[in-house]
Image (cartoon, rainbow, N blue to C red; front, top):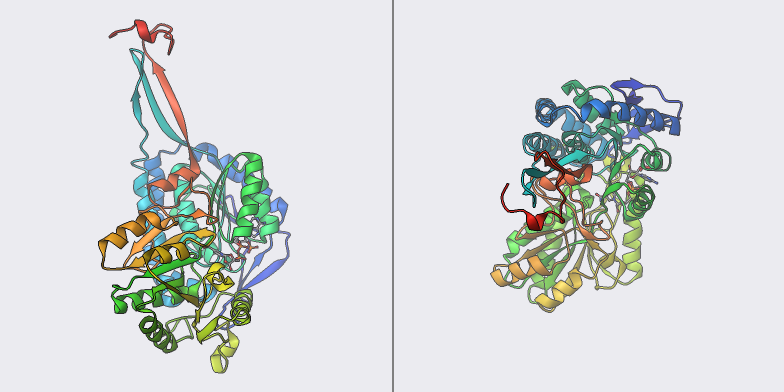
Length: 498
Ligand code: NDP
């Protein structure tokens, strides 16, 4: 039956009146824990304490806030293996990737902690004498963090690390598929010593808890990662309140393979990009656009490698790919396989649910490769599973046109040894991220992360120095120490020197 959790509000685990739901292991079906599907009252209680705690948290010096993040990073480091197993068991990614999820928490918390000693503003000259002008960053207030299941610790860390160092308190609503990861994440923050009310977590459905957070009048910013339709809904609700919103809504990321590409390097990259995390990354390589001169060679090698992948128990170190995260995910991927077949795409390998033995208990799918034409749905829509669409291009311009023909714009990549193509692609690919000679996945925390087009608005970026933008606003300060009334724009012409 697993452990029974409540909601984490005001530094304590509390009961909720909501019905309970189970979280399960997608590889075995085993129930891991139960959580409350919290009510609007629970959300209101969480926002209330987050608002109260904000008053002292915003005044806590940023370097001190950073020390708590560093302490949390230390605990994550100590518990890395244990927590990686929780990630793998609840979400289904292989253990090496579970460790990567936790490592990303450590990396980002350490990075964000340092930001507490920077958080630079500007000093700007005044047009008047004996007057100083500067800008400072201020936290927006209590914020809502709504997270998906594919990086069940890393994404809460990206959002909360930035919110905390900025001086915001938060209410986290994790995906109902991975509340256990979120609970273990919050437990570490609690152990690190964040004051009660700074860190809050409420589990439950998007429609009750998610909407409840976004619509609450005291929530002053929302950071959301998930699907486009949900993101659009969150954006509309947030717009009505005039609050900041960060959205990261996935992609249909392409690797461009030019005819001079190192094919071995390319295939290694495509395998990792397409089938890592069973294709359930927003940056997953879901399209491979190959120059026609090397198309046959690439496809042959790719199919051979895909058929060699070991799909199975994600806790077994020998496994290459675990299950997809849920029955819904499994259905969605198989539906896309049917769509591909129906539209006449050529199935090169895979396409089926794996059956027999341990596979019967989980959501295991074959790594799948389709040869697809550019306008087909498999070439356009995000599948979020282990399905790669391969397309052929006549030349560089054609490859770019295909790459940019989708509604998303998150990650992109080009494999080439020709500097001209590499540098042009940096400018020509409509995406927030471009890799050269590396797959579309592999973001590092010290750089901005986000996209363009329907991946989300370009005014916010997670991670990097830009991470603070989601959770702060600029205050402009004018200090006049002249001892007399000075009038900007009016006195200026008369004044020379002090
Ligand atoms: P969703 O967008 O539905 O879920 C993401 C988060 O939003 C979850 O915590 C969810 O809660 C919450 N949510 C759902 N409805 C609302 C709402 N009305 N208001 C506020 N929050 C809400 O994605 P799914 O998990 O259903 O996945 C669907 C597809 O989205 C995937 O197949 C993939 O294409 C894409 N996706 C993209 C991700 C990315 O990294 N950009 C990550 C995950 C998914 P709950 O589910 O608990 O109800």
